[in-house]
Image 1 (cartoon, rainbow, N blue to C red):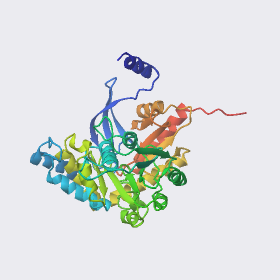
Image 2 (cartoon, rainbow, N blue to C red; image 1 turned 90 degrees about the vertical axis):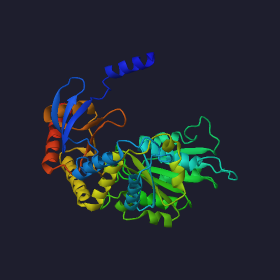
Image 3 (cartoon, rainbow, N blue to C red; image 1 turned 120 degrees about the vertical axis):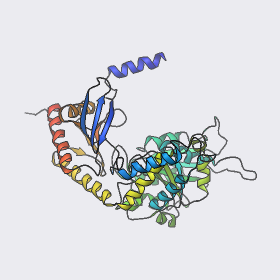
Image 4 (cartoon, rainbow, N blue to C red; image 1 turned 180 degrees about the horizontal axis):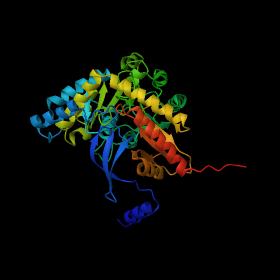
Length: 426
């Protein structure tokens, strides 16, 4: 552990460690926090929550979680294959399938496990079956800015989880330039072989850049590869884009069935931590045979199934989204308003969604900016300085008022003026 101790010491000395805050209570977007190092407490206005529709504190959602605890307890204490499946799981899967227009859905504890299960199921199938031989290699194309859960899954896709050595056909992984379908087409032309099983995987909304994958153009490319699989990670798309929050297909005015009609197999990963006031993830497909493989993947049978209160909260949240699409509209209106206000005050806000990354002048340390805006103005934003290009990551939600967004922008201007003194040439 000597190297770990030396590294962390240098890490802290270099100022790369994040400021840590403990949340004590919430009321809408007002959060009482305690600074971990000093114990100082304050109430701040948050713009760094992923609760995009404000359902975390929705009474119906909280009551659903409470009722589930009273009926089933706090945990299922087993995986769904053995004794951990409850009727709420089936209801949630059915609700997601209807929401995403794909009939077969499998639940997981989180997105990382869902993605790894997909690699196991698609690339390596499940267990040896008498008389069946799997000989086709898999080619995976991935956007260079995909989320870590995708990156982790594909770099480990060569061997089935739980196995030190793999005996399945080889898995080859290639990256293409961010949202560049011309590069995607070039890479497929260069690397695809006649007998390959092809998978292209992308965030629908990119979590650090706030932009949207070019789905129609991706389908145009994959149309040339009959039976290819297109995986969309809708963690930041569900509840936030599309007229009723159904995600990237609705955003572009198409359905997964349109992809199927063009010879492309659509898979959608839904997560519950952003729009559905819970935790967990799901993969939806129109291929019924994929679900049993996902169900017996190591990440399904090696852990417990989604606990009752989390399942119930996600289920009620999705029902709330379907009942109240006006909340999605409010989120999108807030997104446009905040982005417009930031642009009017000279800020560079990249992307187009409620994930609003603001690129600061290179002379400003995002960590110092976030600390200053909290100390001077009581506003909580996320500084990004060690996992992506330096920026301030703002997330707007459906509960933010115009007054709160204007307060944020005013504070952003004041903090920029305090920390940035541009050199004026003669």
